[in-house]
Length: 290
Image (tube, rainbow, N blue to C red; front, side, top):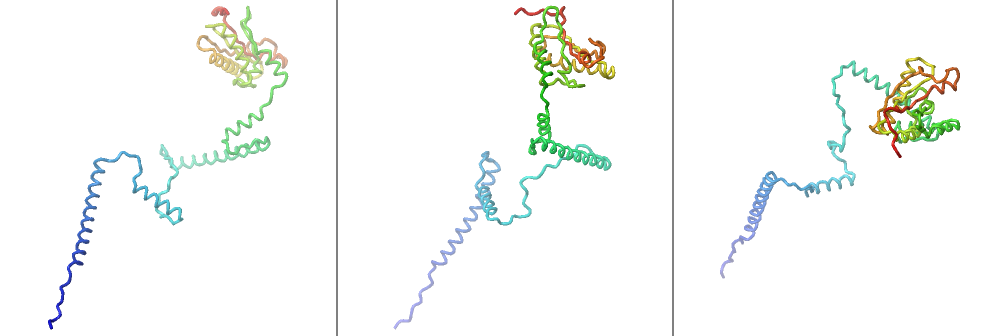
């Protein structure tokens, strides 16, 4: 009988392993080359697209999943927004800084006191608006406290709602007590209808020179009365000029108590002396034909 023959080992398994290693090395080398080539192209020709890259989308999606699952985030994470820190434009000494700090504390104390007083007034009037700013809340309180005109005041206003220049009557007299608060040079908003009607009449005298003079009674100091009468006349002249345009020449004069039309011996006479006179110069105007 012939001896047993031993077959040599098949080389197929070794070649397979070598082939896999070679392919893995080739894949690594190709990937590295592709990455380098891609980076070079991105640097040379940057993309102008506003679309978020896929990699960043995937990264954001991963972060969203982490937050939904309630996983603890890193303590080094940057907050989304931080309060803006104001930088001083001037250098302050320590003494100046302390002085300003003291003034700031006083202002804060006054503000808190004002807020408290405003809240108390709102509670009394039943118009609380805590979500609005302080200025709006004060304006609302002022509107609630506005006192309606009395019957006598309405009668006085009705007498001057239609001032008329006719014939030799080229001057209109308006009582200061209706147009202004006592000692004020701010025209009451509800009384501007008087001046609006006056403006309608003045438009019939294009290019006229209009003199607005203010007068007071004899109470108070002479200088203060003259200054107040001028400021009130100036306020009326400015209102007329604003609504008439630049075709007119307006002059404001404050006579104070120097030209009374009655003795200042009674309340009625003093009220007559407190007046605004609007006069048209007859030598420099011609009434338009209508």
